[in-house]
Image 1 (cartoon, each protein chain N blue to C red):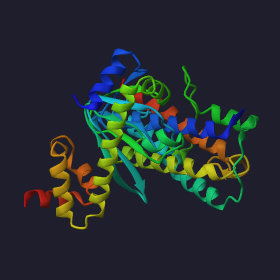
Image 2: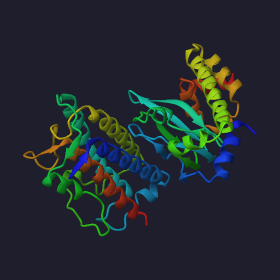
Image 3: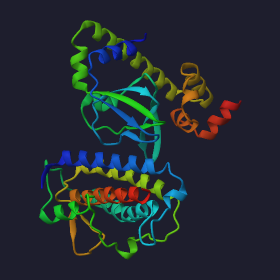
Image 4: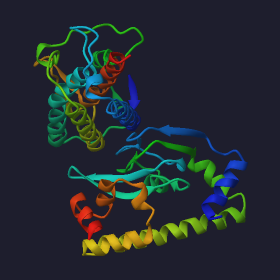
Amino acid sequence: MKIKTESLILDLIERTRQNINQVEQLSQLTEKELNKKKNQVTWSVLECIEHLNLYGEFYIPEIEQKIEQSKTDPDQLFKSGILGNYFAKSMLPSGKMRKIKTFKDKNPNGCKLNKRTLKRFLEQQKQILELLNKSRKVNLNKTKTAISISKLLKLKLGNTFRVLIYHNQRHIEQAKKAIE
Amino acid sequence: MNPIEKLVEEIESQNLWEKELNLTRKEYLKVQGSIDTNLYFIVKGSLRIFIIDEFEEHTIRFGYKNNLIAALDSYIKNEPSDLYIQAIKKTELKVISKNSFNNFIWSSKKYIKMWLEIVNELVYQQMERERDILTKSPVERYKRVLGRSPHLFQEIPNKYIASYLRMQPETLSRIKKS
């Protein structure tokens, strides 16, 4: 995938705005509704969002640090590469969602959760927006970040943002299903 | 009729609104880093414009029913802006793009005159706002804003007014009581 860097950043900002709005809407529900589980293994709204917070806690400081250390200049175009693109796109919600197995340390199933989980998510989104803004000054192709699932692989910063934000979209969709 | 009402009536009769938008309480019309060159008319509800500086929100301006609102920096420069615009309550908006708004304004001297009146008023308000911010005493800041926009205190929750007045919500409550 090849895309103008600025278009990618604007697209990711817009997706984040929508993610924020959906979670602001969920915030209007009672804690009881937010904790509702269809069954033992299916996540509640708060478990879905807590899962996102756990990823945010890894990626936000990682991205922040790599942007700060980056000595690169911005590029007009972002080229995702085949693997990076595949990985990012696999995060997007789709009609009939395939289950992806969750890593144990990112599984909030059974945690005692309250509305603070949503507040924390919203705070993280403002940090992500700030980082997207800062990323306009570096090269999204050449700046690389670690990923949470493997110590061997690195991702281009543009793909890291995509993974993080698409993944948010995915589990917000799931959260909405928990209260259907 | 004030100039905003007159102008909006003209836009209405020429069918220039591009779409309508509904926001529930606390939803965002705009977030930091986006480009937004639209002009919005508030049919119902209220909004606030703020920026975040070192994790603290600073309220810049409010928009009420029958006001126009825009991310003015983005609107003028066509560039990304740091502004957040958030609905305070359930809000209905009508949207016109900068482009069609400009075409409309320049189509008649009458409209240019109306727009100039609106812009003049805005410049005057900004001047007042600058003086608010430069006013040292919290009590004086409160009095200035109360005198100028008493309706603010009916429509907007205390915490946002406090942020607008650059004081803690507790300070505002104390001033209001005394």
